[in-house]
Length: 297
Ligand code: NAD
Image (tube, rainbow, N blue to C red; front, top):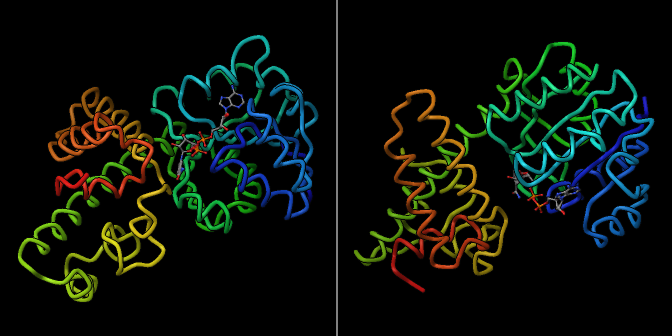
C-alpha cells in the first residue's frame, strides 16, 4: 500500500510529517521555497523537486503544510498550481490552519479541476508532528476522507471526519480559541498565586487534580517547574509561536462576526495576544502570555 506522495511546505510541522511518511515506506517528493528545508528532506530519504508542480506530478496524494490562506491559494490555484499539475483523481490534503471560506474556495477549485480535496488542520504541535501522533480534523466528502485517511494515519493518531468541506477548519479555529482563553486563565491563576505567596508547584499539585485541570495547566504549564517539557522551562522558545496563535484568533474573530456568534473572551484573548505581538514577543511560545500578564519583561 505504499503511495506516491507530493509534499509542499517543509517547515516546523511539514518536515517532520514528511519524514514520518518516508519512514513508513511511502515515496515522498517534497518542495519548499527554502533550500535548507529541501535538503533536510533529501537527507531523510525523501525526493526533492524544483517546484510545487513538479513535486505533485505522478502523485496519488498531496499534502500541504503552509503558513496561511494566501500561500495555500497561490500554491493550489492558477496556471502553475498543483491542482492542474497532478493526475486526475489525486487526493489533496491541506493541513494548514486557514479560514473556513478559503478552505471551501480551494476545495471548490479542486472539484472544478476534477480532483478530490479535504481541509485537514492538525493539533499536537512540533512534538506531535515528530512523534507521528497528531490529531487531524478533516472536512470533505466521505469518499475524499476515505482516500486521505491512510496518508493521515502515517502522520497522526486521532483522525476525525468533522463534516463537509470547511468543517475541519471550523473545528480547528474553535479549538484554538478555547485553547487561547484557557492558557490566559491558567496564567492569571499562577500570577495571582505568586502575589499571594503560594508556591507554584503546590498550586499545580492541587489544581491539576481539581476542577481547573486542563491541557494548558496539566500538560503545558506556563510557569517554569511543574511540567519539565513545557516551553516555560526554555525561556518560551516555541513550540507554538504566539504569532500563529494570533493568526488563528483573528480567523476565529472574523468567523464569529460573519456568523453572529458572541465570543467576548475570544475577543479579549485576541487583544492580549496582539499586545504580546506589539511587545515584540510574537516569536515566543504562546504560553509566554503569562509574562505579558504579570508585567515581567
Ligand atoms: P512554518 O512557517 O514553519 O512552515 C511553512 C513552510 O511553508 C515554510 O518552510 C515556508 O518556506 C513554506 N512555504 C511558504 N510558501 C510556500 C510556497 N509558495 N511554496 C512552497 N513552500 C512554501 O509553519 P508551521 O509551524 O510548519 O505551520 C504550518 C501550518 O500549520 C500553519 O498554518 C500553522 O498555523 C499550522 N499549525 C502549526 C502548529 C505548530 O505548532 N507550529 C500546530 C498546528 C498547526
